[in-house]
Image (tube, rainbow, N blue to C red; front, side, top):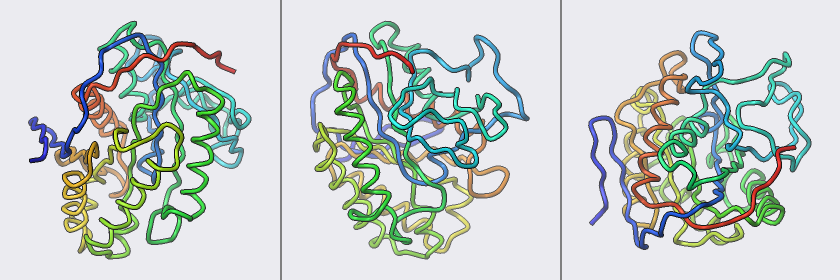
Length: 290
């Protein structure tokens, strides 16, 4: 029977088939991919957080640079360098300190666990408007292969970081292409199994968490609910796979992308899930921010 966590604002589907490891001083690695809702970094009415604010960057929360330099990525550090999440400048060379759900998730996790976590490192490789339907994320496609390559490069360069989880946002493209639930189930299953097989240090015990698209977007697509149902079933069928049904969060502006307040809520829900499945192990050795 699936392990279902119920709260007033969410439901998480999944089966945990491994013991909760002890909490220890640790360095954590999260690998995130998918499409635009995995990249979103929004501000609230152009508000920029000051020192001590909830969305202020934290010296312990780091990001692995992909070296992209075009458009909104102008000014990004060279590929392979490490920078503080939230410090990536935008095309106007302004500090881009908006709300991103990885940053908010990590800050809540650090507050909960205190000095038991010393550093977190993220690989954020996602591209807007990409998916299985346009042949970008199936095993063998370009973004899938780039993700595996960059993840393994990161793992080789920083082996002191212990892989915690894959975190994913996708399925919008498949809903737009009116894929059936079974088509999406097969493609997402192949992605999960492929990444667990090809990324260094991953296995069937590595949690894979994927996040439901905005509820109003799902409702607007003829096969949206079928794909959500297939996602729930996949989380029940595969070990250590979790589908975060966020309880009705909407894309409040454009009908596709979460805004700042929704991203904060998703970050909070992800942190709660991570805590409940006990993702802490020992992995000593800090790194220096470039």
